[in-house]
Picture 1 (tube, helix red, strand yellow):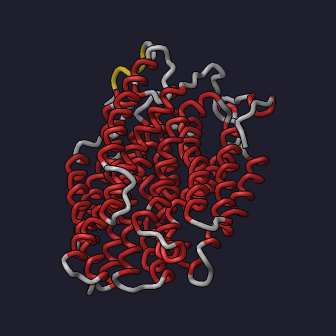
Picture 2 (spheres, helix red, strand yellow; picture 1 turned 90 degrees about the vertical axis):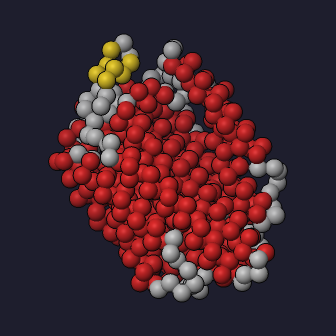
Amino acid sequence: MTLQDSPADTASVPAQTVAKPGPVIALLVVSAFVVILNETTMGVALTDIMDDLGITAATGAWLTTGFLLTMAIVIPLTGFLLSRFTIRQVFFSAMGLFATGTLIAALAPGFEVLLAGRIVQATGTGVMMPLLFTTVLTIVPPSHRGRMMGVITIVIAVAPAVGPTVSGLILQNLTWHAIFWIVLPIALLAIGLGAVWVRNVTETNPHARFDVLSVILSAFGFGGLIYGLSSIGEAASGHALMPIWIPIVVGVVALALFVLRQLQLQKVDGALLDLRVFTSRAFSLASVLVVIVMAALFGSLILIPIYLQQVLGLDVLAVGLVLLPGGVLMGAMAPVVGNLFDRFGPTPLVIPGTAIAAAALWGMATFGEGTSLVWVIAVHLALNLGLGLVFTPLLTSALGSLPQRLYPHGSAVVGTIQQVAGAAGTALFVTLMSVTIASSTSAGASPVTATADGVHVAFFIGAIVASAAVVLALFVRKPVEPVEAGGDVLTVH
């Protein structure tokens, strides 16, 4: 699938002229749910894959980290893609890549091919959420955005939460290859329905510029940082390919150059990722909180299955069932939270939400060899309750504070920080666990005890970071419509 211009596709249609945008949003929501669900199916399957392919936990974590990292590289491109190409072009290219990657992974004979399939999947997945955000922001009035963002929250938060359950149900009787064989026909069905339902509801800019240097700097920046974090865990198990400071330094330098490049290109409206979105205080604060929340979510999503399987000895189906109530709770909450946001704004939701999520992570820091499943389920429910109160208000506040011309770039920035935070959270939690396991093992601890120690330390540090979010949440306010002059955002509260 490629972004080819054709008369049918390039004829953009202003949002206000579309009589029935519902089918477009519905298909985008369902498609995004499927591709994001695919992100976390590897969590429960990781132990089976490690045994089957003979790899370490730190190496296996790259099936998740590499997926998220690829999206972090792809998503900055979506500001340009959504400005230059139509929704139909972007949709078919994204879902085509996702389906191709799914097929590669399903046929994978070893780790390298499986990772390649995940990376191809991620190139398509990375486009879907910004595409959905931009479409909704364009055609849904501000007074109803909370409700619609509540639906999108199901995609962002619930799909990853129920991923382990779906994976567990599949792995109970089938191999890990089946995860991809089951997803493939769903992706192909979405492509078929898209041919009928997807219409162009945004305007395109055929003169949008594509800056290759920005893409290169973005890839080295995000890639270097996440690779460096992941390498800490690999170093603890003796598998690091290079000194960990090298990719981290490369990442920091490349990101600094990337930011300077964007600031330079903004003067001629040619930035790959328009950083003027951060002139909105509401956007900036919400972005910081999204980083913390996403790191906590994805870090816990990869650690809890490892803990349940390797410490408590549960099989994959039991792991999925333990995690299912949390996903169901968040899904049930999403529409309610969206309605509450439309009525009362973000403050009454974000403050208790961050507090509950932080308390849940402190509870997870108590996990050990003798922890009861009732306590695990209760704490996981609490985490999902807190995150469910936070996601919709933060995303709606961030994106709703921007002028319409910055919607594609705001969506790209939010998508980028979500995936970088998810990758960083995954890398950080696995790194802390791996380092602690190595230390405990060298001190004579059994594998089960060492893993329990590693999980404890990872969640303990995660709880400290999440507690900082509670303080930041006190400053979240409902955004007002931005005031523009000369192409710049003047005041946004």
